Length: 232
Image (cartoon, rainbow, N blue to C red; front, side, top):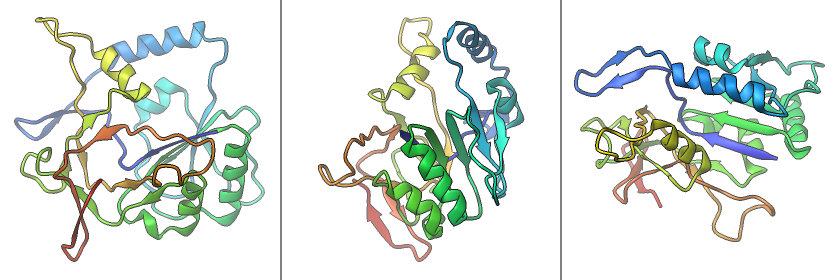
């Protein structure tokens, strides 16, 4: 099983750093490559998005392009037999014990889970118990990195980790500029929190970790009472 844990949801809008405004774009390349993958792959993933916990929800264009389905696991509802991955995107309320048990069983059987959260999620006991299966915990406070925040303490522009296959695919898709230099996608985040990994050799067996983004050695977490702690 695999858990992709993101500390901040992404936007389907481009960010103009000069004017701090958003610029809509049409992801034609993404739509085309998705269509090619759909007709050439032997197995097409069936991805569901967990509902019933509030939050912003994924952009409608993402849902349409990726063919995502909605799922509510409350009550007697069961995990669909065709589900290969469950997306838990920025929920504002905790999972129930019943939902948590179903998701853990799905993951243990080899299913994929993608979890995106916001600062404060560490207070949700059931959600954190799901992360604990993989040895993950959420750091209290928000990330502040003077090297990557453009003067705004709540903003973060981390560096994609090229060793991660997800980032590597995104960088390859950007191609090169007119001079032949590889272009690197820019990710703009606000109010992010850190994800704490277990010390080397102390995590669960058969679980590996690969960071999506990298901050500088100046990065710290800041809590509501202005206390700061250095990130590793």
